Image (cartoon, rainbow over all chains, first blue to last red; front, top):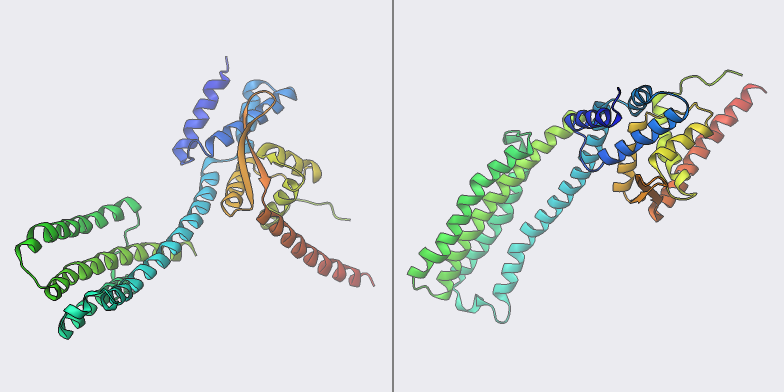
Length: 218
Length: 115
């Protein structure tokens, strides 16, 4: 006895195995399958024959999935371009904003020696230089294709840096009695270069992987 | 007159988006109905692989040309209905311009052939 529901369930399992995601678009495809089966049985075929014909009409799961993959890739590509623009804006604007804050009317510039001012501006500039340097030298980075692996690698350097920041701000800094100028210099050099290195690494690794994918696809 | 044989894959792929946009411009519809209508209007010559329609629909949805909502058929089955968005209307107009252009150039050349 042909069990239609079981056959459809098996078909669903095959689709999922090929990578078709639930609920979208698997629900859509199943709904389509059922309508086609109905039409075929309406024309006189048995349930089993209708099922086979409908499955054949829908087509191979791999073909459908690779087409869906292309749509996903285009979507991800756009998100990546947007993220890059935001990174450029953030890394580029931070030193400018810091400088204007320091030199504003209520800023700390007045309480700092010229040497200290130059020092903090240099620290702030290290952020975009390190970040953009990482991005531009993506060819030097290893190509890590799977997203999960890249995420794990990003964590391995981001977590220690975050601990460093917390440790610095809560344990190291309070031990010292700094003037405003000394405090600014210490803060800037503790935070900005490390942030620059992190962003540079992240950006470079991501760019290396995505450029490779883009070249492979062309 | 030669009879129309298997239509080239590239032509089928290129015509998918303008066909879908034009069909949806007449009202919302769902995947299965779209395929049946294309088949009917082309006397069975344009037979899309059913499953391949859905990645195309998703790409068009992602690009903001069409929008989707889940509804129900008369028998209570869940169905995803698609409708045209404003950007879709502009895209459709652009497609129609380009197809008319290609068609008029080809038609002009054919006319010259028989002169």
